[in-house]
Image (cartoon, rainbow, N blue to C red):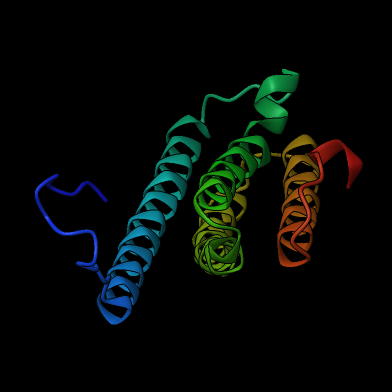
Length: 155
């Protein structure tokens, strides 16, 4: 800490650890709140894009086939990496929040897919894509729950 040169050397500056701890807790709760909002918003946008493009999607295109699990994985991993860069202790809480938001996303995705398959649209390729997406997302959830960062192709 910077001191005025005319102050005596025997003057001590003490930091209030209780106040510092309080600031850290406030910053942590604010970070977790912002991260939860980011993940929820990101997953909501992914679901909206999925719903909008569902009718016109050509599943023979590889990018369209793998885009949903890839977008979700990128969203969840980016938040986890940011949390880890701030503090390693935040990573576990961020992963719990991410998994909770992923669960909410999957419930909405399931409802969307039931509406879509109830209409008779899709076919075998659509069903295969849905099964592949579920498999990839299960791997993402398993890796996140085990605090590992494994590429999607390794699952």
